[in-house]
Image: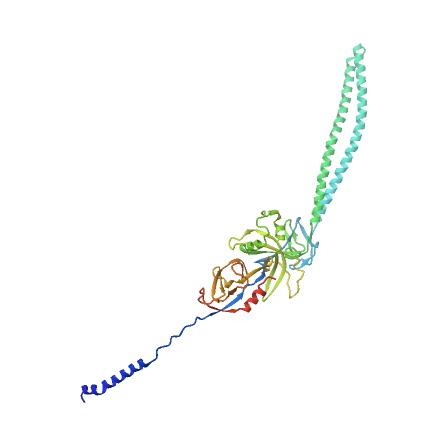
Length: 452
């Protein structure tokens, strides 16, 4: 069969039949039904805004130092005759304990010499008193002899004028009178020197008495006694060792109190003090009363030592604030004091608070009712709320301060508002929400994070 007849008889009829069938199927098919797409609510976790007793907190770390320490420094030189058997690093000695005694032989010799010099000077004083009495008696006799010589001279002068006496007799009488006068003047000169000699001896006695006191003081200083109960931190002396003046033989840490200079962020301190400020327009603090004003703030303080998974705490007091700010970290040194850091020490349970421990210092203000939200709920100064219509609503807020994982709000959120604490993507204002209370987070906020 020719191709043309084959196309006309077979292919064309089949093609027309297929086209007709398709046209009939399209013509008889029902119109598509339009489906209305419903808006989907996004599930989010929410918490209810409540006022909780939350206190501002500031914390920082530092190392423990004793509130006072004492270096046993020799004030005199000598050989160590006695060293306390407990003078070993780590041992604790009571107040008044004899630490070291140096040889005092040289100072006792100096004391004996000073006392002997004092006795000799006092003997010379007695001698001067006896000499003064003797010379005064001799002066009285010589003055009577001088009066006689004067009367004799006057008699010879009258005879000479009357022509009954020679010139030689007059000269002899005058010479005798002058010689006696010289004796009297010599005794007067000797008596005039006695007060000066006596004063010299008195001053010499004063010098020797000073030497005596110095020797006695040196003898006292051969014994080094502990002025307070302390723990031995360093020892550098042994029996028989020559100790020189100014040499440190031991160092002690006081056990009555310990201090920590905790480095706390300046912003946290300002927030803490602002919360406690009762009169913001009042007068400036007098530097001389700063310590008392700090005590009146009513801050609670404690030191916390981390021991693996456990921690140990000591109640403390805010004693003073350092005078400098660290230029690198911007932190302020706050000195916290702990009284009697050895009182509650228990072997294997609670260590004493000793030098070098790295601890956290925590300051807390008073607990005031406030609305607190997790920090993660903040978005550039706003929080997401579930509105009355169930849609997302952005609300600007003011943060009063942060505490741990919480942001304490000053305004922007009211009691009962539902705060979105999860982060759906995207977060578009007006989107429909499916709020689901996060009871676990709410329990943490009301229990764990609330001030106690």
